[in-house]
Length: 216
Image (cartoon, rainbow, N blue to C red; front, side, top):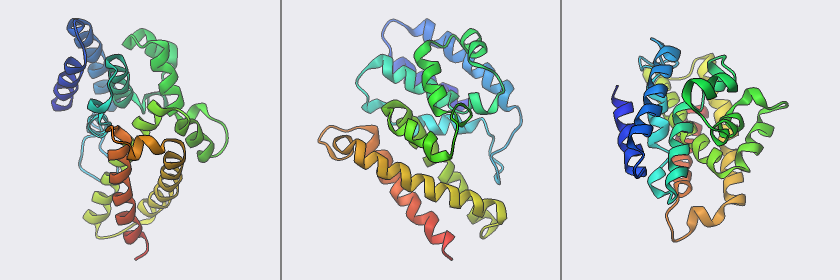
């Protein structure tokens, strides 16, 4: 699949002397997601659901992360960020099946709504406190908002379901952007490029576009 060739190139770019191990791990992820998503489509679109992790990896902007091991962890998290919510498998199974370490599992746990009691904003608070989790979540939200806008435009407007999703995305995205600006101001506007600076600008524009549709 195209997205795994992209992921492998990214991973090889980020590693030194670990090519065989990296390829083995990404191959496990490839087969796992192939089974997990099967012929599923993105909601409202004729787009394979398995494309979503590729898109999330694209918008994580990992080339602006200096540490190679951290880049690897972020790519794995982008590819697997929905797994704890959607697959029904627990952490022990994922560790054994995919060779994930404790740091991988902790990050996936932070990204999963299933592991947090309370409302959605408590879940987002935990993500905002974790820089890596926030990079992945913002990448995921960029892709979700892009796909939602494609769905709305394809249908010529909202239906009941897409309007409810839009309402949720608007509230949550505003909350995350506020948290991002408060907690990581130097990473957004600093002289050194960081994923947040790119993600914040993209989300700001997507949010404005979605709100225009929602208010019509």
